[in-house]
Length: 196
Image 1 (cartoon, helix red, strand yellow):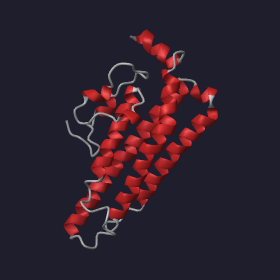
Image 2: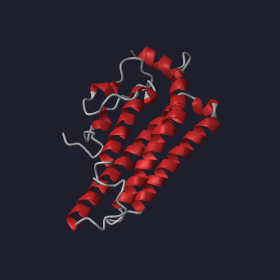
Image 3: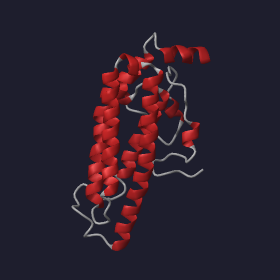
Image 4: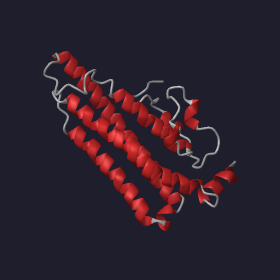
């Protein structure tokens, strides 16, 4: 089975777990491709936690695209072959990342609807979805700015975005969504219990 630049098998989307609340060991821990999710990012929701591991893996992959992205201003010191390889790797990663982002955000927004959070706290859900739109828009801007001479600066920009996603979005929005879904009287938690 081939893997994309995020480290996922191409058919992984079809294998994703669809049950929402999860009290057993994280589903992602069963996949040897990824290390354990840091405790501060663990929402307790199998699907979301697995997808956050994919995000962390994409961050590690991004940093391998250019060996000197943090200090290099541009690609003027690189030979044409290296520039083409770096740009090709970045383009591949961006394509996989855009597809991942769309799936991940759709999963979270479906959870907001299915758990009735969108009816209970519309402002919170709107803020969460606006953050999704801002992240997607920034990735699309990076794609639009692709230039074989500017790969290091684009990597820095994408790396900063992904760090903000991990440090701000997950802690602020995803943890709140997980607490809502995992509460004792949650419609999704009750449905998952009956499904077992």
